[in-house]
Length: 431
Image (cartoon, rainbow, N blue to C red):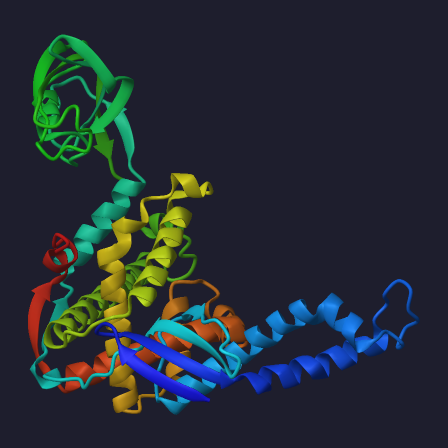
């Protein structure tokens, strides 16, 4: 077997492989003899068909099969011989036989080879979230509002009230889609509606009719309304005041806390807040590490892997959106940038893991499963079920290995902590 390789791009390779024709002919002859023993051809008894007739009937098909198998085998042997690591399947073009050799050209991309650099310069700011009594109080108030009732009041509306209104919106005197509603409840101060609309509902009382002007933001999701000013005719049915339930054992029971009463419920609330904050901290730190890793290490990535990831992301989007018809799927090009980033990160992390021989044991896997099941009432049962399910653990293990790699990068980079309140941290806008 004769192999020559040339680079036709940063990662693209063009490999020409020559295989002695006698190797193909020998295998074809062997298979024709085998077929001849059982071939059923009209006019001949089984096993008595002349070799020439067998070749006429089956020769072309068998030759194609043999060529395909030899190409597959020789391609694998050739990339091993040339120490190449294909990133995807090759594009194969065969050449005409010259009577001595069978030759083909395989064009494919290879995995990039690189050395990681500047890992010690990756900067990470680790939020240290402080949960104070005021944060607990705010959370309890939020939970009270989930169980709140409403009573009609005979006064003008204010923040915290719920107003029940009919409205009809027009732009340049014309009504628009989605611009009207009947007996719509709006809680003032919660930002349910556009600022101008909500502002216009403050200070109204039952029976009031008024028209308010509302300016739509320039980046409003409905393009035909973005940046325009609408007029809304308002008819007020009633104004309702919020009645919060008392903080007592009965309130705790409404959230399925059957033992320990309100005291236990507040402990549970704190633990949930701590867990929620911890998950967000882990996500934020991971994002910082990933961005730092990308920034310090620019590498070429195979187009084939990016295209494969684009298809995967498109499929994920279809599942999220409940789309079954592929013709209705978001355009695949929409995912190109994100897919490229995913592939780059995957290759970089794989190198971090390989260079530092990062592995995980059962204890680490169990810790991750315990985190996943912490919010369930029957957490112990869920943990046992997950740990005994090989398919689930096959999905968990890569996540744990990645987390170990992130921890390694933090330990070997430039990390510092920053104290932040629960309220400020959890309500911070997404960057």
